[in-house]
View 1 (tube, one colour):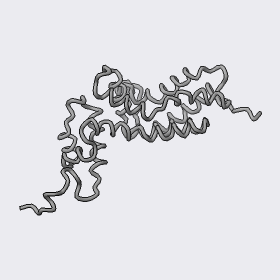
View 2 (cartoon, rainbow, N blue to C red; view 1 turned 30 degrees about the horizontal axis):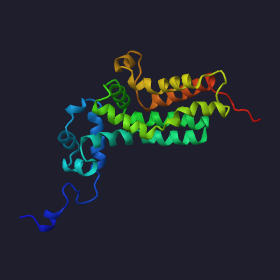
View 3 (tube, rainbow, N blue to C red; view 1 turned 180 degrees about the vertical axis):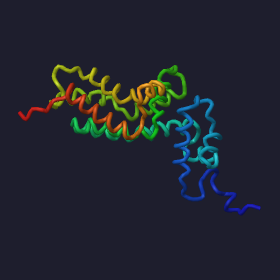
View 4 (cartoon, rainbow, N blue to C red; view 1 turned 60 degrees about the vertical axis):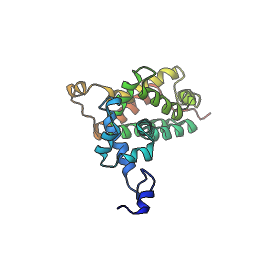
Length: 218
């Protein structure tokens, strides 16, 4: 017979501090990037994480809450750096943002592909709705002004269109992760920390020479 204390314990509440939440997020991300959303059950996530399924209800409420939290916590490091870039308008933080992106996506290289897949879905799709909710919360509208702010601060060439610069910047960051693996293999490219470090330095040099200039001291 179970002790009365055990019977009164809140449903789903962990008996002690564990890393169950972290495991659930990690395994949910691993599953969501390779399987359709409706095929990933909470039972499967809990099984892969090696924790009680009740922990999903306790930490996230349901599968939607888990998916949204997974997306939010994956992109938060980039959001924090973008906040810093926007507040300072410094091209050095601009490149540091790219560095953080590569570092974080190297941990979950399939995540950018998940983003691309989800954003091709109908607006009514659960994944797209949750993605858009997270990005509207984290990527404030004024972030669209970052390239214009860099231009105003004298870091960008005057003949460069900030909007086109933004497209180029996003393309340089995202392409390695959304390119078909077979295409990368064809060119002898393996996405790993060493390659991404070299690519980062190359892209910094490329952007510096083509788009940026030393600000005036006037």
